[in-house]
Amino acid sequence: AAATALGGLQGRDVLELGAGAAALPSMAASHIGAQKVVASDSVSEVVAAMERNLQRNTPAVEARQVDWMRAGRTTFREEAQFDIVLFADGIYSERGALLLADAATALLRPGGSIAAALPDLRCG
Image (tube, rainbow, N blue to C red; front, side):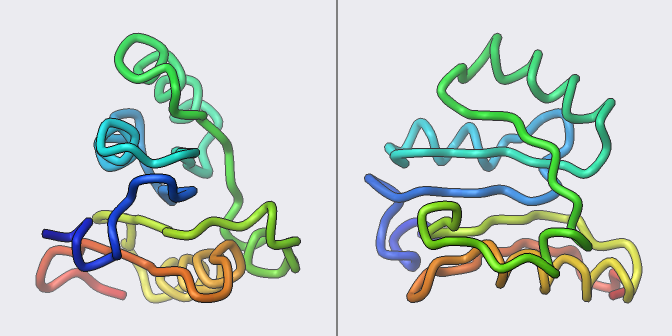
C-alpha cells in the first residue's frame, strides 16, 4: 500500500536514512524494483554491519554513511538526490527529529516523496 501511495518504487531512486544493520526497507525497495537503493546510517560500525548484511541478502543495495547534520546543511545536485526518502523508527530526540527532517529534505529531489514509520509516543 505504501508503494502505491508513493506512486510505486519501480524505476525510482530510493534512500533510507537511519537504516541500521538490517536495512529492511531498503531491501524491500530493491526487491520491489527501485532503480537505485542506498541504505544509510550515521554510525560507521553500523554501516559496516549493514554492508555485510546487504552483501549476503541484497547486493544491489549500496550501504553508505550519512551524517544528518552535514547532509542537512548541504545543497545537493539533483543527480545526487533521491525520488523517495525512507526512514523507520529512527528518531530518539527532538534534536534528532530536526536533523533528520533537514537531511531528508536536502536529499529529496523536487517532486519526491518522504515515507516514514514511527511508533506512537516517541519523543521528537
